[in-house]
Image (cartoon, rainbow, N blue to C red):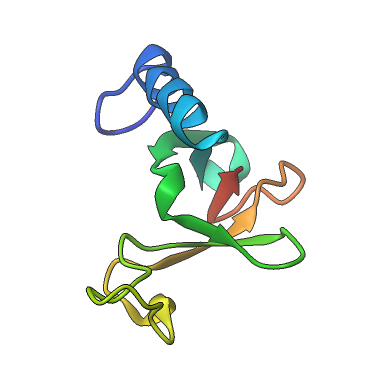
Length: 98
């Protein structure tokens, strides 16, 4: 399923745990070979946020300051990533099944 050597069972086990804890899960889809193949990875659901339209998702492990208030722009964090919503008709880049 991915270059880390995880199989479908390993990824789905992580997704089931996230679904139990957070009532949802996220899978990163990384398209390859011009959209002819893809790699799948579990993404920690607690680290994902969505825009209002639900067509773009934001990932970072640090959404809050240590003092408990939100960061002004978490997308500036070193680990932040922006994903488009999963769309098999546009097989390019990274997308998120949410």
